Length: 241
Length: 241
View 1 (cartoon, each protein chain N blue to C red):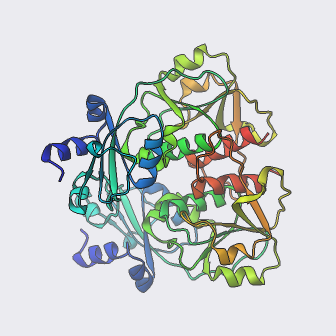
View 2 (cartoon, one colour; view 1 turned 135 degrees about the horizontal axis):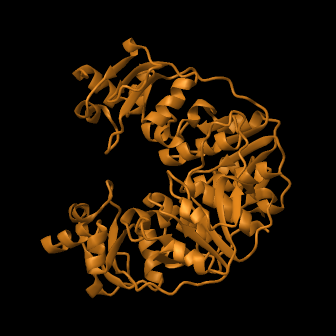
View 3 (cartoon, each protein chain N blue to C red; view 1 turned 90 degrees about the vertical axis):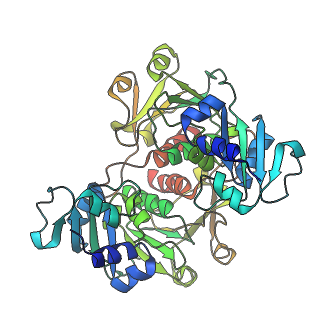
């Protein structure tokens, strides 16, 4: 059984202000939940229609039925489990190595996919501008496939951060240098822009190293790559050596 | 005004069997519709809440209001226009150059993003196994951003196709050769697998060139890349020279 108050709480967590007020977020699906349980995230409570979470104390889990799961799930087709976790305090920024910075990313699926790419390419630090989509948005959590447990994410004023950094700063533009012919370092900040508008003009001024992913189509009509696929190519180039 | 019969027809086109029966599909949003209008796709009818499609004959367009648009749209937040286009006859497969083949791709967003990548990287031929998501699915059309107008797509029996080809065949696996250290040709077939299961065992047997995108994380816990981001990296590697 899930009480009315619990349903109210959990569904409210689909909104950022209630996640912030309660310092809780939720994840759905066995894979993501198991990754989070193995990590430093602290479980608040687990709701499951199956009895296969032996690692979770009885006091912290409730066996529920599909009808109840449907009431608390954010998915059209609910999975078999949903878990509430505590939002951890923001850790300090790791200021060395390769850092990925996202300027006003708005799409939760893109942010989740990019987090997964960071994990794959060993980027431990992701920085988002304050207007970017919240990392604890359920759609982001869903798309990360658990990578959120292994990448440090901070929301900061990107302009001030770039102003004070000593690392080289990179960004992708339509008129940059061919990324395939550029020498890319092991340390630096890579900035990726908003889905519709790219990197903001204020930030653009601060980027010494403008890069371009060359286009190979004949008709030259494709306006841009999706930001997640562009990030995949850029991170691959920085890591391939 | 949109008649009840028109609403019934258009909403039915969200399902593959009705698209097939009527040989029609629909697209939403100015950008995608304009790309399709400029291409060889034949317009059946345009519904718009704005009067900015001067290139379309009056007999082929209806100015409608937001309430009517909401009735025919497949989007939660409808755009300002929706257009029906005729499904063209499948063209013959272009059997040279780089060809991308998708084995059982199921997610419409992934297929749309991959089509956009083909367009960017000048891959003119995309081949899908017969059980792959339909290219005329509204969510695919939405994610292509108009690239569907420039990439030839065929649905065929992949096994027979690979059996008869003389081109070298490539695929990504967990245990393949480091893609960054492989010599990649200008001609060949690149196979990408299903979201959950990768490339099917029958097809795997027919792939001479197994490639791997190396993973750079320390913990080695990220199981896989999303198929669209993996495709981005693979196509980038084939084209970068």
